[in-house]
Length: 436
Image (cartoon, rainbow, N blue to C red):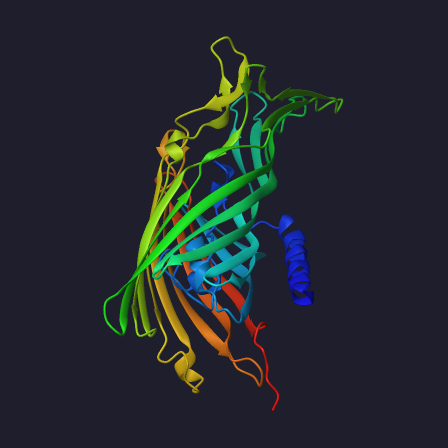
């Protein structure tokens, strides 16, 4: 019981750390719900997030809750990771670098009953973090320069509790129940070099407190003594998550510094709500003698059916903040990856190292001024380094390097190089020791 309490305390401390952090510097995080987080742990990251078909007994694979049924009956697994990244932004001949580091995830799992595994943890859901400005000449008699300053911070976090069960040999099912929480603030400040012109601030805010449910299943087919294929599918329930999105427009007199604020929160008959899409995903993993594991994942997020709160200028020169369709588009993502370990149970340190690689391609889930947002290409390399001491030889240090490129016509291109370090503690908490 003391160990469970320790794990819970560590989880709560990490949660407090995560609340104040953002995992991105990208201006693209100002659209939609922000940059969608790569919801994977240390061992998945080396394969660029691959995991729907992985049925591992020594790692927490929360991408598919059916995998929890494979957790070793003698183990308690605790996995936490941090990430650091450097991003290069390019717009024509203009280039800029930005650095970012943040707590990434913390998860844990154990075997509760025969054929039943349990996992819980904290993972990111979306990230928002950007700050930049643009200037234009107004071309009036005073040579006034207009400056638009864009800034945003926040994101949504996900605390989950999941159960995986193997009712039949080779078949596992599972479910993750999650609590989504987090807030964001996006601000646009329009100011002018002319001291007589008023400044105008648009401030968009929301605060989410809601649930999320994801179902999963895996089925393993044995091809031979050394070869097997595991098929995995997941289904994420799409629904409104509230958030009470709000728009505040603040006009400030540059001479008197007096501000006038107008707030828009929808109309009496049209309540504003953020929404998450229905998600369907499938993948497989081929396993040869626990040495070579190859897999492919595909996911579809049905954003096209999701509405978004939008600022609208009406024909009568009034403005509204209302729910609007056609802002999002369906997001498709495909990932290919592999894990190679010469001999996982060898006494040799070198033979127990895992070598991982992965590539992925994803389409955007939003439009920018009627144009498709940035497509995403990424690739990764990773290592699972065994930690061997006198009482534990099953823990792993997972290190991965990932390159991510976001680009679209007429807008900026950003290239991110990210390093993720995850430490998986895999201890025998439930073994019964005998003394002769």
